[in-house]
Image (tube, helix red, strand yellow):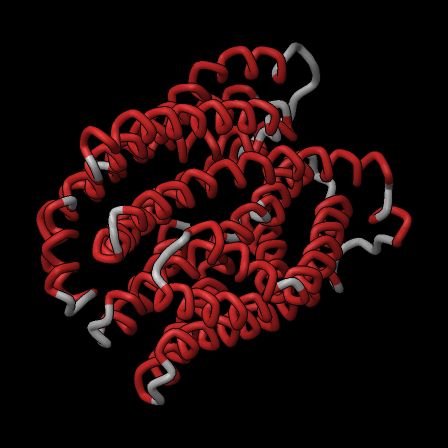
Amino acid sequence: MTLAYMTTPLLGLADTAIIGQYGDAALLGGLAAGALVFNVVFTTLNFLRSGTTGLVAQAFGAGDAGEEQAVFWRAFLIALGLGLLIAIMAPLVAAGGIGFLGAEPAVNRALDTYVRIRLLGAPAALINYALLGYLLGRGEGKAALGLQILLNGTNIAFSLYLGLHLGWNVAGVAWGTVGGELAAMLAGMAIVLSRFRTGPRIDLARIADMASVGRMLSLNRDIMIRSFALLATFALFARQGAQFGTVTLAANAVLMNFFMATAFFLDGFATAAEQLAGRAVGARDRNAFRRTVRLCAVWGFVLAGVATAALLAWGGGLIAFLTTAEDVRAMATAFLPWAAFTAVSAVLAFEMDGVFIGATWSTDMRNIMLLALAAFAAAMTVLTPLLGNHGLWIALHIFLLMRGLGLAAMLPRRERATFAPGPARTVS
């Protein structure tokens, strides 16, 4: 899953590199702002991936293949409905993003183009969340890797052709993403439907079971609030950067690509924690649960250190590759250490998120994320007038640390309540 997730930030890096070749800070800032608006919408809806993973993993641990299918179809129907609604509302979403960020006119034009086009692919993008959640819940990392490579590989190829070869710049990158989402959706549905044909038959009544639907909606509500708070943090980060000027906005956008690269690198362990913790909870195997927490934490911190060291060593060269604008290069290089150390600050938060999603302890995730958002807003308000962009990056580190430490503090109590004496199955 680390390999699978690493294909996603490569996409962001490729898009930045494509637009960076135009040497226009406004285009680069518009791409970053448009991607942020898109991510606010879609990361808020990431419950379609993470919620599906947790519920499928628990059904897998309990040996209930029919419920695995039912969980997928519930997620699929929600994804289709929400995707169509978002595609229709694309102009309103773009206008809202422009109003929130308050950037320069040239940045706003690029943002509007990017968001309007990308949201046309919303149904396919959300169905891909459901597909990925199902595969990850079953622990099928190779199939998930294949879909992610297909999605992001076709995306990059289309974006290069449309964005650079045809000269469509931001519009070409956006259409390339839509094409990648459609290709992955078609391949993913082919995989899942072929497997369902050989599995147990389920009827519409099971898919529409109100108790199960209610549990999914409750879980999804909490994860949605948690995801919205996460994106609100990144939106505030980008907005504050925009207030410092277009060059700072563009430099922070380049560095946030590094943060996202390390985040997806570490998310492989978070996903392993989701799947393995969910299996352990479904089977009521406390030893397997504790082993999952321990191993994911140890290896997560090891690789976080490796990622930080790599960015400190080679980040300057990557910045030069991503943009030809000298003022953006200089600004990004000055703030590179802050971005490099986000891997260490964030690793515990990623792993704890995985454990809590797999165990479906969504209320705690929601509450800790809201507290961390409040801490970020307070730190940003106090530190940016004193330290400028340095203060903004310090506030981001405070946010990441609060998430991880807060969830870790709640873990022992939740474990005791979940694994109270009762029948158990052994998870291999």
